Image (tube, rainbow, N blue to C red; front, side, top):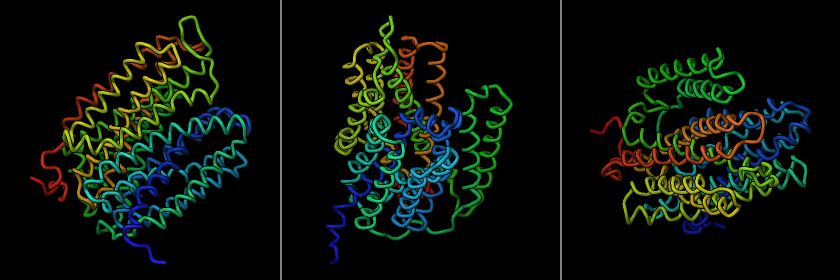
Length: 470
């Protein structure tokens, strides 16, 4: 039976939403189970931390490369390959017998971050312009909602079933997504011509690994240790070499003129800031909820599952906020969703800083943060689609996602440093208050950056490469 174009088109957004949800859920589902994994695999907290770090590093290295492959060889084809690899990685993790095998499986799973930029590129090439902002907002919102759901699902499975069911669930979601993408997403033609820039991909990957290793190992090695300083220096040298190489390549992975273009630079800066602000809450809210109640009003003594449920309303608020992106952009212009999202994020953070001693305050005020997050997450890919030509949509969104990931690493380390001021005992209330104020300050910085992320006449300018613009 041949499917009509309208029938196929009606399934594009559900297929992409399902694929991105599966990735985002599995991004955080292992977090509540790390202690359990440490015990059952007979390993140490240092090695179990690599269950997260390996996934992060793999994502950073593979996402720009896979996004560019989608631009060159077809987004649907590359997405099907990524989903197949993700399913294999999940199956390998479910069958892992030791922490080394599990870490190796998580490296394979890291390729799934590329589903986000590939989805944005597919939406841009298949949907009419009037549907694009809302669809991008929905897919972006699912990234945040899935991450929140992962904390809850991970807690439930860790509390009541084997940790292997975490990855069985991931494999099932990957296979369902694979079937939906194969059926509903049209093939399309490659959006770009040229060859894959393997030299640029290697330099970018190595520089990201150096910087992210320095950020993740800083607390254990010491920020002024030779190893950490050497990794930062190596990252800087590799970035300099990458820029020099990409300037002279005919088909570069990184368009240097694109990165130094003011709207694109501001969009990437906004992603960095947003990633940092988000991770303040990912660390602080579950820690606050699970800590035993103290004399200063800190802590609820909640279980892992309850701590995750407290964050769920904020994560769910991301979806309707993302869906409203199209209407807000049409009514007020392209610059307001990003600035407004950061402003709402700042307001929710300030409210939590002022009052966080009761359950309802976490539920309601983090819900405000979630609404702001939905606008920011939806605005970023829409701004990129207004800046870059269609041939570079996947690559540019991949780089933006990685910059947001780097921001998340920075935010998690800053949050850990603030929490550590309380010593080895319970975290004092002042540390949590400081984190919430820091999140508000970071969001205010995002508001200040937002006006620079919009170009006049973006809809027509995006049709040509940055290097050819006046």
